[in-house]
Image (tube, rainbow, N blue to C red):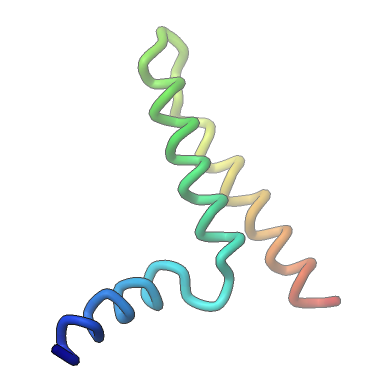
Length: 64
């Protein structure tokens, strides 16, 4: 039973890690990209902007 509990905890730690806000931002950016991809607009630009924004916010929070 411990292996059944350890695996989801390991996956959670790998994906979320120390900053749940960044993980949530990545999920939201992927969702926005998927929504835009269903239209006729190119969606490649969403993730680079999200990465720069999330990195800036993460560095700002770490430096406080």
